[in-house]
Length: 310
Image (tube, rainbow, N blue to C red; front, side, top):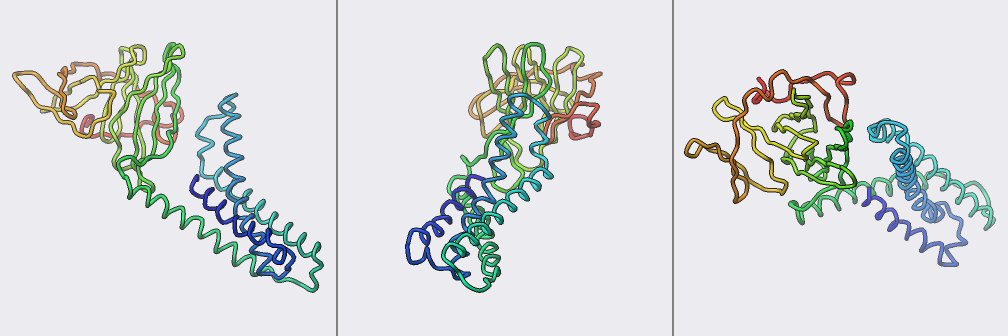
């Protein structure tokens, strides 16, 4: 949305130019009046939903009045967009009539130029925004990313645990993932494997020893909130192994058996993995993560990883 705001501000320069020149300021033709008012209306249409949403986010972060996923719901976005559109069109009509009244325009004025310019400018905002994102991604696809979104889980003892994601592609469903541990004012992050394609969906299980198990279509993790520890689970010859997952990011990983020991390779380093016995047995479904955290009572379990859990 940042790109849309910058583009709308730039387009508002068209209106500012015509208002700053005395000769054009007094002209009351439909086309020129539209050029003086429609860019301001387009800016209002974009900025009003953003301001309302930021206010709602601030209020909810302060008082936790409702689940955060409601703020990401499509119906809210449609409603706020409608409010922005009404405000933008009302502003255009107000300034157009004010101009005609102030400079004594005679006769009727057509609103068709206003509609035409509004559609052209509105479409240009989204086309230019698309192009800006595409250029940013093309310029440095490795470093491209959006903002982090946090999905807060129920508190584990004295530890606040949150799953966070951010997009790493302007249009496709590709994400960075990480876990955030908060305890006594201290914050620690664990980067998880990148999702290179597909919408976010994790099943979460409670293990018999109290730890949590996160499972998506590609990965499985055992999360110990008390120790702020994350274990990565992988399968080799029908046997499961666990390895402390590195906090730093890495681009490549593999595993192999060496002298009777299972070694996990990441980047240029390696670490020994331990075989699992019955740690994942008799686990209970705790909830899931999609566009937020949902408890077991809110959403039923879905099978997401047939490789690890056939």
